[in-house]
Image 1 (cartoon, one colour):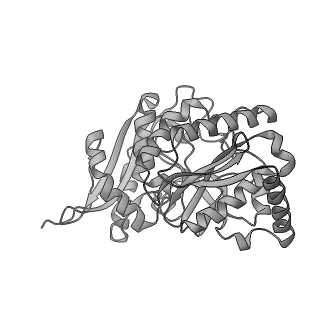
Image 2 (image 1 turned 90 degrees about the horizontal axis):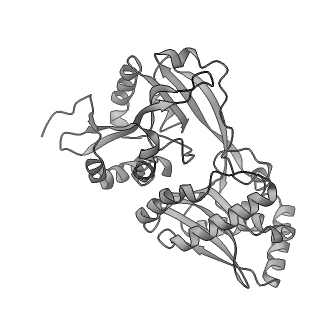
Amino acid sequence: MGIPSALPEIVCDTVELEKLTPAWRDLAAACETSYFATPDWVLSWWQAFRGETAGTAMVAVWRGPGGEIDAVVPLLDSRQRLHPRLPGGARCLTVLGSGAAAADHCGFAVAPARADDVRSWFAAVARMHTLWLPNLDHATGAAFVPPGARLVERTACPTMPADPTRIGSSRFRKDLRHYTRRLTAEGVKFRFAAPGAVDEHLFDVLLRLHARRQEVLGRTTMFDTARKPFHLALLRRAAPGRGPCAMVAEGPDGPVGVLYGFLWGDTFSYYQTGWDPSYARLSLGTVLVAETVSAVRAEGATVFDFLRGAEEYKYRFGAVDRHDTTWLAGRGLSRLLLHGRTTAKSRLGKASTA
């Protein structure tokens, strides 16, 4: 038995990070982090995007006296574009798993007994480095922001109970039943693909339907084949009760809609969707959301998280805002250039209406 150190070990090797996965995942579950702070997301992200980041993964790990993991703080040492007048970016530490794949509710798996050690460590790091901490969850991320950090952005992430009886108003629920009956009359059926049941073929269907809808709307999207390797990595790590899942609307000639997201703990996180625009007259997008609420409730979820973006349709379902925050801390030129910086308010390509 040893004496726990207030300082972490820093793990950079991919093989060693993979060895941490089971204990890290258990700790994340115990600390009630979001799916975006699990090793499933973080290590899949690193596997898929490390060639693009030109950075180094630096995962701080605190262990208890028996070698058990007490805290995991995954960071990336890389260049980040913090200001339009800084074209080359600024060297800083950021949250590993944020950025390219649009993670929300970023945070860290930290046992309560280690919270003070992690806060002290972040404060010490901020005296030597610039910290760029995007989209932090209030409890598991922002709680560790060092003193003196500047709030850059506060982002709405609407959520609601995963309870079909509490969706919207009585009139809204009546409309849902009407459109569901009309879709059924046209031969549309719904099926839920639980974690572990989503495969590459279904993901390709989602990409195709998403691209078609975005084209009709005249929008660009970053949710395309370039992101496929990352999501395939997530699929490989899925298991019953956790990971990618989907609600599929099957028409007479094949899938006409897919809503895709992640189950983790008591929460379903709605990440992306795609559906045949010819079904817009029957509100297929809205019905997809409602069918997903019922399905994830049956899987044990009690929270339906729409993730970032204040699109009006989310509030018709009865969602209320929770907020993520983005922070800049530490030293260096990037801190001085923060003034005037603008950041994206919503995930590019996510549907603005259901």
